[in-house]
Image 1 (cartoon, rainbow, N blue to C red):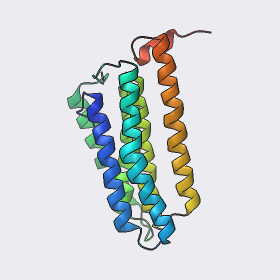
Image 2 (cartoon, helix red, strand yellow):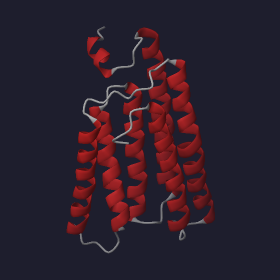
Image 3 (tube, rainbow, N blue to C red):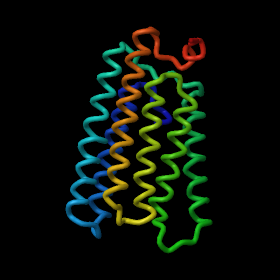
Image 4 (cartoon, one colour):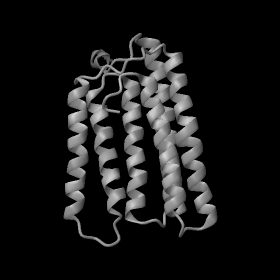
Amino acid sequence: MGMQNRLYGYISILSFQGILLFGVAFIELIEIKPLNLVFVLFETIVFKTIAIPVFLNYVIKRNNITREAEPFLPNFFSVVIITAIILGSFLLSNTIHDTHLGKIFFVVALSALFTGLFIITTRRKIITHVIGFLVIENGVFVLSLAVGSTMPMMVNSGILIDIFASVFLLGIFANKIGDVLKEQDVDHLRQLKD
């Protein structure tokens, strides 16, 4: 994601993350009830892999958003910073000595959380901020796998409602902003007044 310039590339990577989360959930969540497992698998494959990328593509086409992500930093610096985030996550996970913590999932979760924050802070388009938020949400999903593979149904419902509400509200926000502003740049939001 650090090297990506096109919004459709971001959406493709987000969809690929959904496929990876589906595979990880299918392999790791062997100790939970079958109904709960079906719900988690349904959530990851339908919402994270199909519905959200289709909805984001619709928002891009409806608002005639340019295909460029327009980062504040060059791609080289973005890759260096994201690599530092991953290395820092490895170092942080080595300082924690807990037998119930899945270290690999913890590293991936921290990397996803901080990478999503990095995408939000260094990109100009509002739609890339939505994508950064979804990367953070994927990190929260992996963090729940790191803490324990027995994910209760309420946590899954909370994650699903959070995804739906955030993407729905941000989609409405992007559609209304598209009616007022012709360009979906974050810098234009500074000029908004009552």
